[in-house]
Length: 360
Image 1: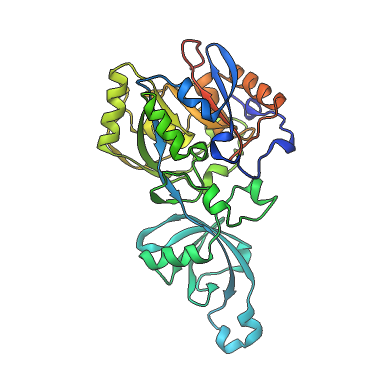
Image 2 (image 1 turned 45 degrees about the vertical axis):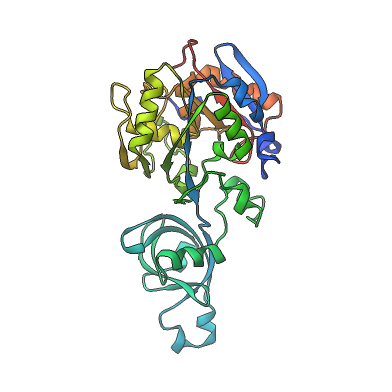
């Protein structure tokens, strides 16, 4: 299984840099045993069936992108020129013990342990360690004070394919957050869930579809490229997640009653598959998962997936190919491109239902 098996040509004009307005105006490509259908996200209540259950990721994205100035420990003695320092761009990755954070920084070569990065007059971080591709930072604020300082100066961590085209702005603080975001910790959004508003959720429930929330704090590693030709040797990044006892019981009850369990987003799918045992029963679960799903994987609990359109040669392209079959996904993506669907995090969506047509 080679990386080239998951490649395709995407016109640059189809990369979305802003979401559809309103959220539910995004298009929805339904892929099931009958083929493909061009619908809209607002049609979900008519596509889903009474007795189905949508699994939603309620993680909350933090404004994890920071811009600061390096201050050397001896800057006070060295004078104003040293105090001016180098401009440092920081993207927080994940928290560590004691309030430290792992972070990507640019330029990495400008930093060494002991350096301080100043983001404002009252918000700073010390470099406590430097690795090959990241640093560990210790901020001068913790808890609620840290959250408030981050909210004041941080920007939403837009994916590289958007950030390279425009800077994050005030609109992204709303656009890049789901309406059911509850637990802070993600540095990337569960983007399939961005299409929902409260009215659509109410319509879905009125149609007899149940909603269950789980939490997976999406990491920046979700955007890391696959660098090996043999995809089976790729190592996934780990992300922290939790499936509560009530969520596990609800998912198991849906399966026992013959309903479909449909994950909203690859993050929710990876989490419930991590929490499921070999018999397909979801257990209460908490911890880090680095589950890697590619063709040949046997799904334990997932019957369907709502997800946006993914990057060529990405692990997410491998995941949807595992669910639906590689050739079926190639055909679906070719259709989406020919019909002008918008791709990636702020783009349109798809509903993938393997049904009885094979592909798993």
